[in-house]
Figure 1 (cartoon, protein in one colour):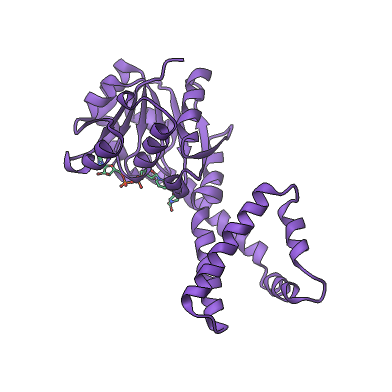
Figure 2: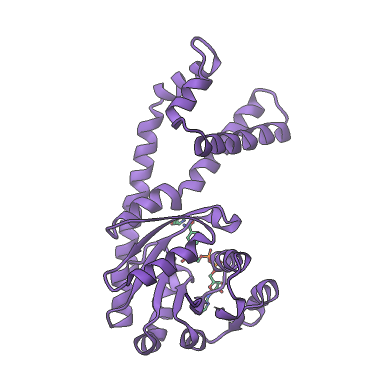
Length: 274
Ligand SMILES: NC(=O)C1=CN([C@@H]2O[C@H](COP(=O)(O)OP(=O)(O)OC[C@H]3O[C@@H](n4cnc5c(N)ncnc54)[C@H](O)[C@@H]3O)[C@@H](O)[C@H]2O)C=CC1
Ligand SMILES: O=C(O)[C@@H]1CCC=N1
């Protein structure tokens, strides 16, 4: 299949990562456009990947089969409305990576039925180690869905949800998820220091343990519960820690925290549709 031309509207962190992933995987750089508000903010992406750049969003969209909306949610309405006529004439596949903006809202701002894939990536995409949830509206063809998947696979794994509300759950799990693990790392490092380790030692032990545990969970045929049990010697040290977590109802707390994140995602969709 010919590689489609892709325009990234808003070449910030996430767009930079996806473009980087695509180019590293051999995507033709001449088929990629990146836009931003000023030439200065486009220098980096131009120098790094030799893609086409412009400060005029419509110029890029006019060239594109696929448009990736990668500006912040707060400016999305203005950006989409200013491109509405171009979208209507060009009919590109539109992929939005913005948190909290539904495909229905995007379509309303465009003012015509449009093929839209909504995606929730996460920040490890910056290391090509991300996890993205994808939703496609009924206008998206199988071929377009394949294009969206290829694009996001350049920065990690991709999983589809059938209902758009699934994106709220994806946001609670993998979108916000890196922050939960960072919080746990912060707490473990602090606890290590409180137990007498110097800060650097506590940090290195914490981070390498997180990496090792994640790799074991991904690569082992055992599930996380089995892996946990294998660390936990009866009457030993881990058991004491796990009992303490259970007394504090850690699982219930995680459930409550993630429900709050999903509820906020739904609420933001309402607020941002205005
Ligand atoms: N799940 C998650 O953790 C993440 C989700 N996201 C989503 O990805 C999107 C992009 O996020 P980042 O790359 O971190 O933001 P960013 O702020 O790094 O990039 C956005 C870029 O858009 C540019 N921009 C602003 N107005 C523009 C306009 N009218 N025309 C063209 N460019 C314009 C800005 O100058 C900026 O460089 C956001 O909508 C965010 O919700 C991003 C990062 C992580
Ligand atoms: O905190 C947020 O609202 C965004 C969405 C997922 C990660 N960051």
